[in-house]
Image 1 (cartoon, rainbow, N blue to C red):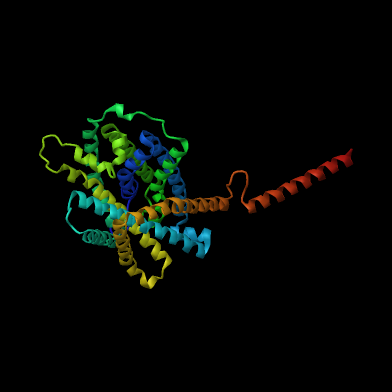
Image 2: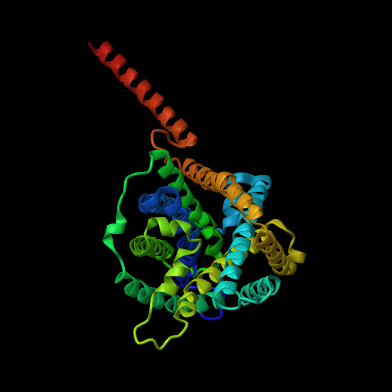
Amino acid sequence: MNIENDKISGRQLGRLVFYDYFALTTLLLPGILAKAVGMDGFFALAAGCGAGFCLLLLILAQIGQMRREGQDYHQYLLERFGTLLTVVILAVYLLTAIFGAAYGLRLLCDIARQYLIRETSVWLILAVLSALAVYGLCNGMESRGRMYEILFWFVLLPLLVLFFLAAQNVEPDRFVPVFRAEGLQLLKNSYLVFAFLTGSTFLPMLTEGVSSHADVSRVLKQGFVFSVCVNLVLFLLLAGIFGVPTVATMEEAALTLTAMVKVPGGFLERQDALLCGIWLVSVFAFVENALYYAVWCMKKIGRKPVRRWYLPVAGLTVYGLAACMYRSARLTSWLARIYARIGVPILIGIVLVAWIMSVWKKGTIPGRDHPAAWKNSKSKERKHTMLSREKSACREEKR
């Protein structure tokens, strides 16, 4: 582990990014998928996670190239898109990150009011949470890496206990019927799962804060695969305990599961509040990560003299948007549709175009080399043809 150099290790990176894949997916996807496609939501979840893993592999290839060339993500984009397009791309990243942070903050406020402090004002809760997120980012990347490395075990161990206790109440008969959803409907919901996992497109922004000796690829793959396994197991537990029709009516089924599970011995009066701490920590980490991405984009777009104001400005923006989203379900739904229908394709398009340009630059596109290499090969072919003709002419003369 690095000390006092504002860098985090590979292990810390993996545990920091784990929350991006775990927090919202486990809270929201079970109810959404059960309502849309029933038990086939398990297969939609698996397919969407598979597509998300393919995206992660593409991102890791970009990160590997950046680290080999000693670039940060801003330099990587400038080299491929130029100044103007890079500013537009960073603006898209900025808006997406602000939406993600505000949505997570709204969800976190909802959980806190439901399980911990029911009579407290929404404005006060959102203000305190926003201030804590800003304060956490002020302490730097190294401090955040150490904190979430420790908190990871306070999430993992209660989660394993929850799964173990809940598994005793599973009724396998509730896993049927399956294969009832239409292909197009299953595809739409797989895309929805994939949309929750496109946070991978922000990972290159973290490379400048990671130790140069860290095995980034391995830890990010491990964090993603572990979160996928948790999501699949959680969906089966919820379906096996409550039944798919009941899960479809729940907004946050995972939190309902914490209230249903009883710790043996009865020595915990509010074990539901203790177990919901799993998602309190996870969603807050998600919010903090999204706020970090937003501030990173603002720094790369803006001017250096005013960079010290970016963090509080981003915090106030997220606070205001989260408050509006909490008060207006229609606004939340509208922004979510924009993200799924417009934001996700743009983010994937940026990654694909950057990857194609990188491959073209190297001259490794299958069936076609780099233009310069192609010209060289053509000239070599011409020279070879001319030599062959000269040799043939000499042979004819000798005859």
